[in-house]
Picture 1 (spheres, rainbow over the protein chains, first blue to last red):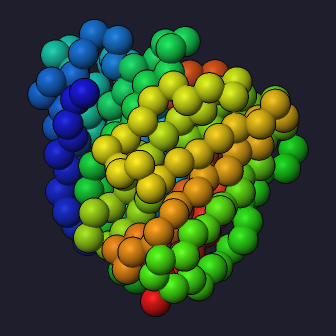
Picture 2: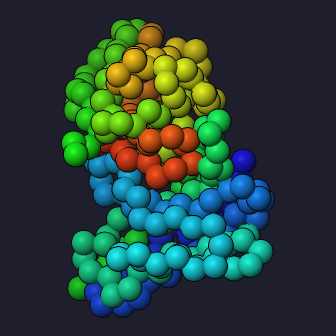
Picture 3: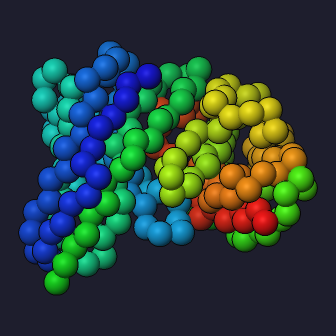
Length: 112
Length: 113
């Protein structure tokens, strides 16, 4: 199972773009990269998922280089409500199930 | 569509007791997985059930067990509670394999005194 490494914490200001990088050196061929957001006393919420290159949705972009050993979650123009913990996960998609291992997460603090 | 529902939301128990937590997945989802979250250890995978069968298990002692019913609802049980079992227990559901997008409930906050 690929282990992930993220910065423990990051600070930003409202309106800025935030990039959180995750390292996953031992990612396997079948592994997808998924990011979740968690607010205190709530369950994590899915943000974005990708396999390679770039994925974009209405809330974030995910950049994955060719070697897939890292990925970067990009949050455009953050607001105070984006203050949360962000988790990078690497897991295999197959019909036999699989463990999803959460790393320690990145605590993002957005200031006014 | 209703989200993942976990009951109870809060629970206080004493050491040595046992506890059962419940999780109702999103309608149509067949996979249910459980996680334990503590400040010190973060989110740790407990086990995953799919169509009433346990597919994967994390590194937790046998005191932690679970099951899934034919309607996909799941329960987890912790016997002989220890102080260290105090945590937020999260349930997540997905349609198929656990590699897919997971939908989490708000969790059950268990305090062991």
